[in-house]
Amino acid sequence: MAYLLLKLLYMKKLMLLFSVLLLFCSMTCDDERYVGELLIKNESNEPIYYYKEFSTTDVTLDDISKSRLDNQMLSVGEKQKWLLYEDSFANDSKIYVYFFKKSILDQYSWEEIKENNVYSKRYTYTLSELKAAKWSIIFTDNDIN
Image 1 (tube, rainbow, N blue to C red):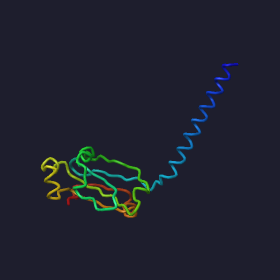
Image 2: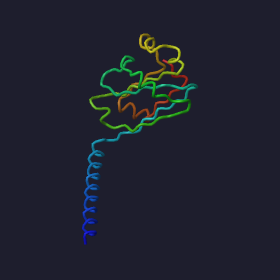
Image 3: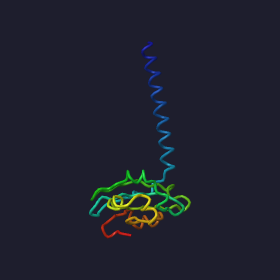
Image 4: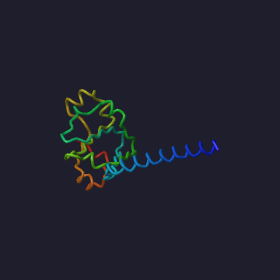
């Protein structure tokens, strides 16, 4: 009898946990309105570093976190994808994407890059512009600032 009572209590706790998890998932999924999947691909002849940021104001080289940039590299032919949600573009935010060829980061110090505004390419998109670009930003050898 005690065994059945313990089993019943265990099942009730398990059902409560499942219900709470299901409720949590349904609440978070509704609030995150998915709008698309961003693809960034390196089709150049050397590795590139990229930096992406959502902002309501212009993003300049002074705003870029060098430590974050150092961890965002794409080898030749490599691509990266992100799910994008409507709240990223709230208040007329845009996505800013900077590209730096590895040779630039090897040749210049970060201070020289910022002082002389040196980068390979910069893209700025609103949500509608990114949709029109089919959610893709492809970096090629022709993409030199």
